[in-house]
Amino acid sequence: MPDDSRRRPLSELHEGETVRATITSHQPWGLTARLNGYEAVGASLDVIRRGREPGVRRLAQELPPVGVTVDLVVGDVRAWHHEPWVWVDLTTPGRGED
Image (cartoon, rainbow, N blue to C red; front, side, top):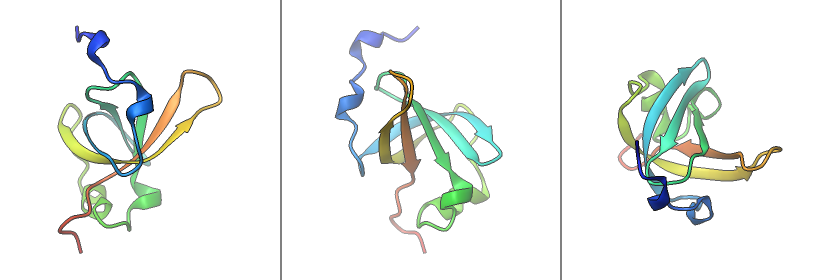
């Protein structure tokens, strides 16, 4: 079991920051992930809505397997209607994409 006392607070997440994320599920609309090193949080990447963005296109064609750790970018951090739920909208690094 991971030591949660060493996890960074969500207040340290900022739009545009690259984070390591472990893929936790595939969904009809994209994927969910756990942000490594941060407090528990709902994090997802909607590849249907964002599939044309640089960096997301390739990921949308072949989702990384569940359990794999990848680099993703924080797109938005939103408080949800029930505390302490926070939704982190993720995207992919766009470097080298067409």
